[in-house]
Image (cartoon, rainbow, N blue to C red):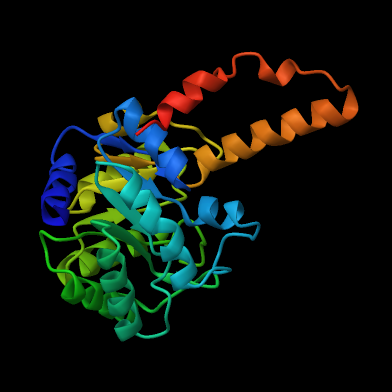
Length: 268
């Protein structure tokens, strides 16, 4: 079944473009799948926040996978996992991480080329992608290589650095390339033209909010949300709590789904 889901997920990248929402627990994943999204991603940020810790390496691999496994089990659509930078210092660690992700049923994963906000050297980053590919052959796992020349900066020419790294990662086995932090349409168009595999852009992260249809028109194939949906949920909770503590009123319930309807979302 995992191979079938991997093929289904990979095929989505060959169309005109698709939105890939990011869930942080089985309930959020189930609601997103019920709405009709053809695949679901996890978010390291959302998972971390749900456990009361910040994003960015606060959770170890086993803790993350303990949260991911029930997400995979909750839905009948492909699930791809945020694997951060691979949970280890060496390519062998990255290979083990990808193998563990496949064991819990994930059919894809993101791998970042940074640690502590600093880009790996391109040779080291490429070796890590190659190790991931060896651990999960093509057709069984959709490998999304994330490069952060824009997100964390530091490159003299982030466009050239991104394109050069993308080509190396594709040669090493990446199925698609993820470039967060790009904030203007013309740069996104140029990246889509220069990168030889489907381009993933995260919507809602940068200050300039570019709608998914516009991103598709620029050549983007995969639009993910990162921690944005989790932020929306947590913002609603904070607003509700603030209203309760400041006024005691219940205006935050306007528009909320009725209890019975929410129950129905999770009926077996």
